[in-house]
Image (cartoon, rainbow, N blue to C red; front, side, top):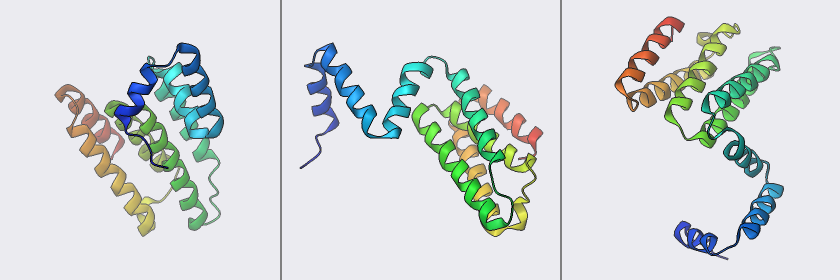
Length: 158
């Protein structure tokens, strides 16, 4: 079975009634957790990006609190899990400004929570990749936002 192109799906969706569209959305939400999460973002947070950012920041804080610090291996697993979650929420939004805010928060929490970033090669590389990603995304934003985020990064020592 071949997957239909996006343009074909768009045409088919336009031909459906509202009731049929609702049923299709609910059916998709039942099958995968990510579909349900994306649908939740689109329904509840799409117009309130600031509220979405705050909710995700709280989730990041919760994830950092649950990280097992018994040794570096378990800490790295928890940090990677938190980063995967952060990137998933960034993907839902698709907004560059949201991406910068969440990644800056992720990196600053990594430092504040007492993880010795430079003591582990893997952790140092992960941290450096996120900083590069932040700088690349900042460069695609408006000049005023670029200046604001650069100042925030300097203030946080990133």
